[in-house]
Every structure is written in structure tokens, then in C-alpha cells.
Image 1 (cartoon, one colour):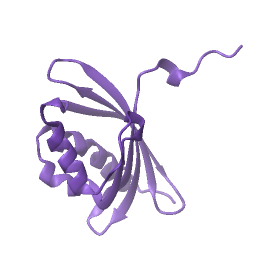
Image 2: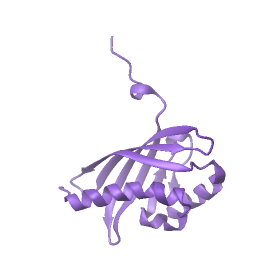
Image 3: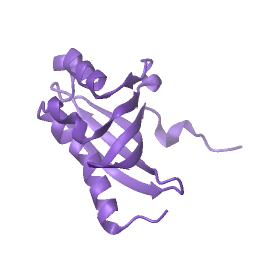
Image 4: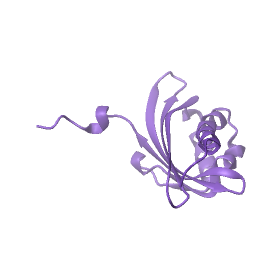
Length: 138
């Protein structure tokens, strides 16, 4: 499947919108980002996956003041697949109220819906080891 430039732009903006909505506390607008049956995979953080927009919203409210004050998304790479799905890799930086910072990788599956592009699956992985944990061979 080939993606038009307009689709690539819309998908990149979709991924970027996440940080704005969460940082603004606009959790009632998460359906603009995710399919109703989205899977938000947090297993790399030792947590269960969240299923559905309501579960993501409730988890954010439960985290409360521990949420980052700023989510920054960068290095967005959009790859179309033959089945009509789109895979998006990006990096995220989260800034906490105390100034500490964390880094994650996002692996998203994005699908076209009647309402536009939406994320149907998101996997978050912490980035804590240089070079992805790889060491020089030999």
C-alpha cells in the first residue's frame, strides 16, 4: 500500500496531537486519537495493557500529578503495509514537574476509520540503555 503525502501528514499530526491533548488535560478528546477498541500496551513497564479509550482516560486520571507536564514526540517514521494498516515508530520525551525527564519509544498501528486516521494499537517501551542495549561484537 502506498500512502499519499496528505495521509502521511495527517498520521504524523495524529501522533503529535497525543501530547497536546494529554498535557492540556483534554482527556475527553482521546477518541480523536484512538479507535474505540485500542490496545495501549504497557507490558514493558510491568503493567497490563489498557483496552479502550475509557481505560486510557481513567489511567491518566489515576496517575494524577505523577503524569508528565510535557510530552514531546519526535523522530516519526510512517510505514504503510499491504493490509491497509500503517505502522508508526516515534520517540517520546516526558518532562515531569520536578524537571526530570524520561524517554520512550512508541510503536503504533494506525488504521483509517470513518472519522479519519486513528491509533488501534500503541506499545510503549522505555529507553534506558544506550544503543538499544547492544554491545560491540567480539
